[in-house]
Every structure is written in C-alpha cells, then in structure tokens.
Image (cartoon, rainbow over all chains, first blue to last red; front, side):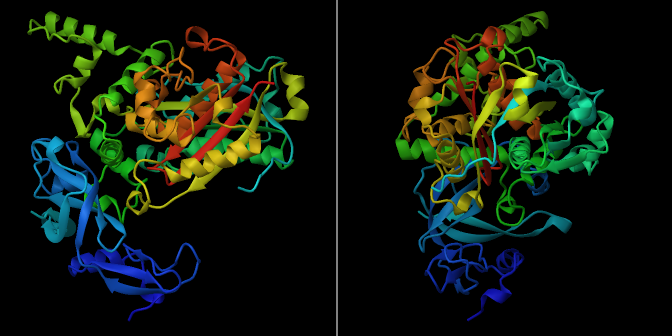
Length: 140
Length: 420
C-alpha cells in the first residue's frame, strides 16, 4: 500500500488520466478523502494510505451551466450546448466535484438531489486541451 | 470558543469610496485615489495625511485584470504616501475585509496608531469570459475547476442543495434581488442603482423606441422570471441573481481609541473581529451553510460579548442571491432553513427587523472584488453615524456587522462595529 509521501497534488489529475478513482484513508481516524491528501486534518498526521473507491454515489448539488469558462468553451460547450456540473457524495463517504451526464439538461428542474450516479471517465476537449475528465452518469 | 481580545481599542474615524461601475478611463490606482480623497475629506476635525503610518490594501488580482503585480507600493506612491509600509492582501473576494482586519490588528498591537485600510479592483478591461476564468482561480484549479465549475455554478449548487434540503421553491431568491436593487436605488455610488421596476420600464421604453413589440410584465417577479429579460447564467441562477463585474475602490481610516477622540466626536469602534478558512466546496459537511462564516462570526461575537439579536444591521456577502440568504442564517439572524422566508416577509428590508445590505449589497452596488469588503465597512460607518442619506435606517442603529466571503467560503471575515 502506498504512503502519504507519494500523495502529491498532481496525483488526482494523474489518477483520473489513468481512469482510477483514488482516495486516501487516514490510519488515525479511518476517514476517506478524495482527492487523496497527505495530511489528516483532525490529527494533523501524515498517515494516509491510498485506496480505490467504487465509483458509486448520489447527487448532492448541481448546476446547468449556460455561461461556460474558456476550458469548457474549448470542449464545445456554450449557451446552446450546456452541461451539468455537480457535487457527488460517494457511497464510501467523501464527496467530489464532477461533470454530470445522462440528466435532462433542457429541464434542470427535473434533476433530483439524491439521484444515483456511477463514475465515467470521459475524453473531453480538442487538441492540446484534450484530456480525461471525471464525470458521473445517471444510474437508472 | 477561546475569547480573543484586541491589545487596545481601535476605531474608524473616516471612510470613503469611489463610485462602483465601469470606468474605462481609470485604473485601480485612480479609483483608489477617489476613495482615499473622500476618506481624508470626511475626518471631522481634519487630518494631516502625513500622519498615516502604514497602508493595508485588499486586491484580488491586478495581475490578471490589469497585468500589474506588486500593487500596494504603486498605489501608495500614487496617493503620495511612500515610503510608508504598504501591504497587499489577497483572499479572493474577501481581500479588503481581511486587509481591514489586519489594519485593526496592527493598530491593536501598538505598532501603529493611524493606518489606512482599503481595497480596489479594476475588472472591466477584460471580456466576460476572461473575467470568469480569473474569478475561477479563487476556486481550486486542480480539484474543483476541472469539473467545469464557474463561480455562479458553485453557488447554484448551494441553491439546489438548499431547495432540496428545506423543500422550498427558489422564488425567494428574486426577493433578494428586488430588495437589494431598492436599496441600491438610494445609493448614488451604486453601479446598478435602479429598482427592478425602473429597469422594466426602461426596457419597455427601449423596445418602443426601436419599434419592437413592447414586452408586458405584470410585476417585478414576472420580469425576473422571464428568461429573455433575465437569462440563466448557471441554473438555477439567472443574471439578476449575480453581482456584476465592476471597477471600484474603498478606503477606511483605522486609528487607536486614544487618538480617535481628537479626530472626531463620533468614532466607530471595532468591538469584534473573526476570520476562518476552509477547503473546497465538495469537501464540506454541508452545502447549505458556510462553516468558515459560522466560525468567524462566533469568534467576532465572543470578542464583542454580543449575539445576533444585538446586531442592528449588516452588510453581508451577496455575490449571488443565495449567498445572502445563507449568510443571514450563518450569522444567526434566522434559524437554518428560515432565511428564505425572512426575505420574502420583508424582515431584511431597511424597515424590517434586521436590515441587510442597505447599500444595495454587492448585487446592486457592484462587486469590484478586492474593494467589496472595505465597501461594506464604508456603509456600516455611514449608517452608524446616521449619514447614509435617503437609505438611512431609522432608530439610530448602534451596532453593525460586515460579513465578507472569499471564494465559496474558503475565507470568511466578520467585523462588528459600535457607535458608543
């Protein structure tokens, strides 16, 4: 099992690129964190181990974005092609920011908090900005 | 909570601000000079600017907005106050609330007797897309922003979580907009100093002048519900749920209580101050409350020896309408889940029991991010001295509070003021 020393800030992006959902688990409190972090806040100890997560969770809050940032404009999103972004509470406990797929973008009032979701690693963007992004899909 | 206290008493004896808005001919140092000169001009018994000993300036990102770093000495030089120590403080949209607090702590420590605190931001040189990107850097660029988040969408997440948790519709957000524009219409320095009803009439006239069909709205709520008049930015938040992109500056003169009385008969005392930090929005235990705000205000209330009932009015960080409602709960003015009802019932109007954002708030007055926290202090200073003009709250308010948030609550700073 890997130790706190290898948990850098870049590990999150690297693990997403490898299509892995990694958390760190505190030896002192048992708490899980995603993105993985090297220090347990409660005890301020560098006592983390890396553990994989199942990728199942529920929607805790969301938005359908009409005015996109330039990174999402480059990926083809704009007022006419909107996307959903949200916070997903994973079944193991921690929550993470992600794009939300498979929901009715045209009718955001139909999107429900608590909806079941499952992880999906998506290719997003074109050319230099192309990369793997973390998303969760509506799990019917 | 541990009761912190200031090393000695600290007061404000003057405050000023530039107009907030879009000023193509002015950069941030010009705007700060406007604020500074107004401040110097309103010291009751006058002050020699040479007596100012240090400068604490809030500024979020002159680097991105103006291509200029190291802003504090540049501003100090422009207003003629070099070689005094000049400090720039960056805590996103809380920059000048924090700069003000640092000035208070510096005077309380005894290091200085007279300090200039304030902030400025020049945002309108960049197109909206670039401003959106610049503001996004107040979020976590590695852990949050890659998901596709913008600032409106962060607060939209809080709004959807709030509606779900308390099982309410989001119509109440429009009441925040209407109230803050009503207040802003009485503030000559506001960027959007018009009531929503005035904006409706202006749109009708513009349509008629162009020979286009004149839109019909039954009332302000109908206008705000119209997607053409009020387009969605990040559902459920629409344009009028969002504070604008603004240029502006604000300045406050912070002095020790010992010398305050030699400058004015009506100093405004700082009786409480608190600040706290937090991580990414997704890592919070709750999405319907800002934990750093609860910690900051508890620290400030404990220092002041007061509670939420004692606060006569407050300027809170309404960068988005949902943020004001959550703030009024985090500050203890209303129980959780009841802030939405309070605004609908008019409790936060100027003539309500707990006036919130009498200046028009960031929503109507404008949100030049690095100036907003100091701008809040300017309003409380005016209200407590009874010089807020047409928007003056009746009954001689004696205790006021400012609540200034950076990001989605990675920083919150709260300051409490009293006219004794």
